[in-house]
Image (cartoon, rainbow, N blue to C red; front, side, top):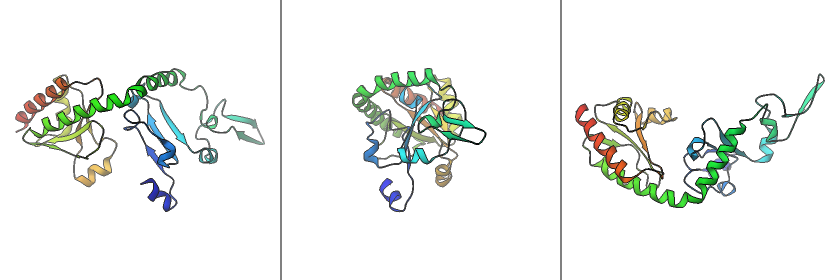
Length: 220
């Protein structure tokens, strides 16, 4: 996709939020201009993330906020800004968040391969378990994907599914998942989505399946 976009002169930004925690990402090999991911997806704190950009593009972008430490000179006659990344970091940064995100990455990166293998085992088990439930439809079954399953239950809204699972002690996400145009294209109000990480277990997969069977009977 990057190669095709570049062929027509497009600038490419990759949202790597779902990949950064699970794969070794070789940004230069991707050929993109910008790559971004969020801290909480990599088991770090919320409210912080990472944006990588090609230096020549970052230096060409104007600052989007203003404050101390992002300027080289301020005068009534004009202002000059520092080079990237300082030109985009006005004022006091999220120091504690940056430290915590660094620690999270130091923890998760050495175990990525083993964690991903475990998550794929959970994904395969959960996919088979959910497929055994009448009236439940899995939305999206790519041959290669991270350990998330989006689904719907006939007769039920995704928000209702999420509320009932929550009452059963199971936390999932419901709604448009930041891709409302896709949901509109598919003709869906949204989906329920279960996500698995290295700390989840096969027993929890079974708990999810058993709870969804109860919900399906309620909605029948």
